[in-house]
Amino acid sequence: ERKRTKTKKHRAKKKPLTLDPDAEYVSDAEDSFDSGDVSSHGDSLESDGSSSCSSNSSWGEDSLEPYVMDDDEEDLRRVRRPRSLRECFAYLIENENETLAYDKHESALMELPAMVSSRPLDLVDMTPTLVRILLHMEDKFNMENFVQMKMDSLMAFAVHAPIETCLHLVNEIGENVSLGTRLEALTVLGGMAQELSGLSELRNRQELQSKQRESQLPNNVDEIAMSSKLQRSLNLYNNPNVSSRSNDLEESPQSTSNVSKTRRWRRPRTTTITVTNRFGPIAAQMMYSLFAFISRTKSEESIWGGPLGEKFLSEFLRTLSIMLDCSRTYPGNSVHVMAQDLFELAWSFHDAQSSEVRYAVLAAMGTSISLVPVEFLMRVGHFIGEGDISSEWISFLEKCGFSDPDTDCRALALMIIGTIAETDHNRIS
Image (cartoon, rainbow, N blue to C red; front, side, top):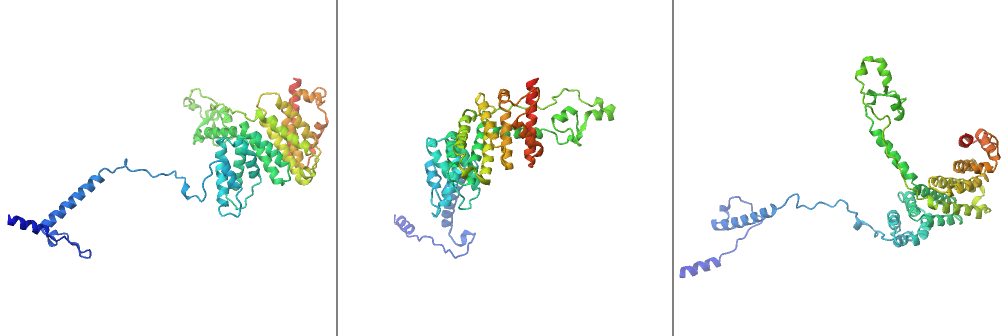
């Protein structure tokens, strides 16, 4: 019993192991530790190693969380992203002398197109205010892509709130503003008509279809013999790299056995592209708002006078021509009435001295002639006799077509004369 108590006391009084951090590391444990200490230390290392191995053994590709690549870096922004149209309004009216004015203006311009496209509840209420701010907004910070972002925001309002945007823009161009502001408003109105009518979408889809058709052509077209009809349909008739099948047969009569007799389509199949004209139902309201504007302000020299007035008048007539052309595919009789009114408005400026105004007059007349009914031309005496067309505006077209100093005016006038002659021929036949 005494021996047992002594051994217990000896074990209890055992000094703890101390290690010198500056001492050299020795791989042989017998030189620094006794066998008992080494065994205990080894057991602890083995237990730690087994636990670490057991924990590492569960790691794998499936347990690792992927890194988020679509981080919007919201935490790195100097200003908070606007969440509503009212916040965009507050950002846009921020004083330019403020510290975060640049960041707030840029953030509002970047978020407005997507926000307007979502059609929030206060879109109609905030449209006039935001359109006015955007129209008069200037690039005071030399912002990158400022013009594009500003135009995208205006077009977003024009597409999703067309009537409110059109009426407000018409009121703005009648105020005491610069020519650049008036031309920008007309650009928005013309782009709105093209976007709502589907012409922009139609052009994009046609270009995509033509690129797909070209990509389907083989690269080694110089080694393939094509018929003349297939060459004309693929616009390769005058291509020197493409050989004709008939010429190959004449040069090598023995090659008739190598020509495939399988019947193929001479023209590649293309799907019909259709778009919805959303501009047609509101075309009359928008065009007649511009008609009312010119009737109300025709005596104001500050708008229509001088070289600046001539420039504005030419763009004004071109915008009306674009609107009329965009509404031609919408069914109804309103397009014929608008064409007659535009024809009479354009004819009232046919004696302008500016070549830009004359070109705009010819463009408006050409667009209207293709849409007005034949009875309208016959009623005013434009068609006289069998195939004989003689009237004041026909004389004006002939004068422009042969003696106008501007090349574009001459080409456009001759094209309109050809359209009138074709219409008269169809009427007689």
